[in-house]
Image (cartoon, rainbow, N blue to C red; front, side, top):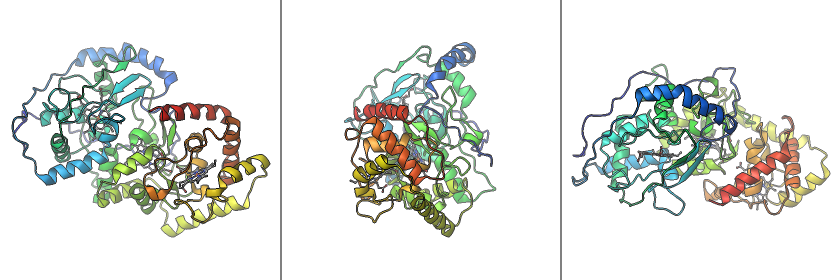
Length: 473
Ligand code: HEC
Ligand code: HEC
Ligand code: HEC
């Protein structure tokens, strides 16, 4: 191991709290914002934070700094450890958040908008002045488990340390080894611009006391080794719940039946991953989850074309056995469905959509003119890309139209892989009224079992705002 470091490892709790399980009843808790929680409630949150939690914060106060170390000692991690760290960094999407548009990889500076203000990702390269260059392993471990920076200030949970805390010491060591092996880049992190009172970092001590469990993952001995591996990856570095679990008013992920029950991220819906909350036409099986996570596409569901595409591109670095373990863990939240049965349900959903064509003159012509060249009647031969039947797409079976509207406006420009194919944006070609009619028609046509969406015109306006913010990046 490495020569540097102060040795006195950060205190690691040992309370075993297994990840929350959804109840069979389930619940659809669609939150309305990404991190953290609903905008309309932030004022209430502010009052609560300033009033109640402030007292806790005062008691817990600032945390001490961990002494800086000098990097003059040679790095002594093995190549194998560094390589494992690289794969773990991909699973954790470190570079996705810690790289500014056009900036050096992992040098930070990406602005993250939250209802509480704007926070910038930090420099994870080993630069001594602006990055992790003077961080001992203990300082890194404390940041990942407790959300405390080396100098003692609390970090905001836009950094998913609430999930990363589950990571084992071995894996944290590999991550640290990898981060320290990168070229150092001098890049100061812009100061966050938080709304009052969230600029006061000590308040986070109260938040952590309420919502954060810093203990590493504890295996559930009643489950298989593969299931436990999957749970460790999904709820730890994979931080899948950061997008797929709805949050409360103070931005903490909800537990119980809300776990992985679907949430909104940057105006996209991260669909429910539990059978109880899922609106998917066909239940997910371990093999369809594996295909989706490995290739960004499942023939029984569709593609990763929105924010999930980036996640899948990073997962390409993750070993097959780990992808299988995550799929097997996630499948345990789905009804037990054989592959043959799932294929049969997919055939039925497609046939059902063929039988019940709505009489929608103008919208039908719009679909035929703008979409049918590639999508045929929603289920044509594969001329371009993978062409999954639209009747299986969770954007169309979902309780909310947001993701379908984003696809129509923005097309599929950065799919998880090239073979998925590309779709042009229609933001300029179609006006709001046409897009609303088209979405309504597609819902009736390809998800006839579901009720019509309401409030579409307003939803189209909102989707346009999100799409414009996206293209401005
Ligand atoms: C969803 C976005 C996101 C992801 C993914 C992410 N981070 Fe961060 N990270 C942040 C933000 C934002 C901050 C700054 C928080 C603050 O200033 O309070 C941060 C801060 C940190 C810090 C504290 C640095 C300092 O100077 O205090 C460390 C260490 C860190 N991240 C490591 C990682 C590692 C390692 C990974 C991958 C395993 C990772 N992060 C993935 C958003 C992210
Ligand atoms: C940055 C936010 C984000 C993270 C992190 C994330 N997802 Fe997703 N996920 C999404 C969004 C948004 C979608 C909707 C489709 C899209 O974006 O292409 C999605 C779609 C999916 C789907 C398809 C669901 C359906 O019914 O179509 C699966 C399965 C999935 N994600 C699994 C995972 C797993 C497993 C992880 C953790 C390794 C994960 N996601 C992490 C945002 C995220
Ligand atoms: C030039 C070809 C082309 C045209 C025209 C086109 N698409 Fe697509 N579309 C694709 C490809 C390729 C994909 C990705 C592969 C797949 O899902 O089959 C896709 C995917 C989709 C998806 C699924 C996206 C996801 O992330 O799950 C929807 C929904 C969709 N298209 C709707 C439409 C609508 C509505 C129109 C007309 C306004 C349209 N498409 C026009 C090529 C096209």
